Image (cartoon, rainbow, N blue to C red; front, side, top):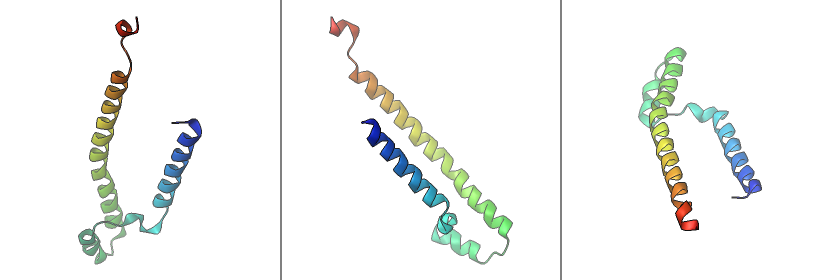
Length: 87
């Protein structure tokens, strides 16, 4: 991937993440969670619940990224010719 295209993709991802993080609907959960929290007036509980949702998201994202990195490294090693084949 050319450097300029790489920068464009990185800029697009960063802009999208910033827009999602600073939007007012960023604290939305599934409809059942939202219904359960709608009746609560305890802002501390709601804040902690939202943090809990984010914490529960970390293990699946970590596993996905780890698998992706391993597969990428394996594929890269497969692409490089051996020293014996070059001679």
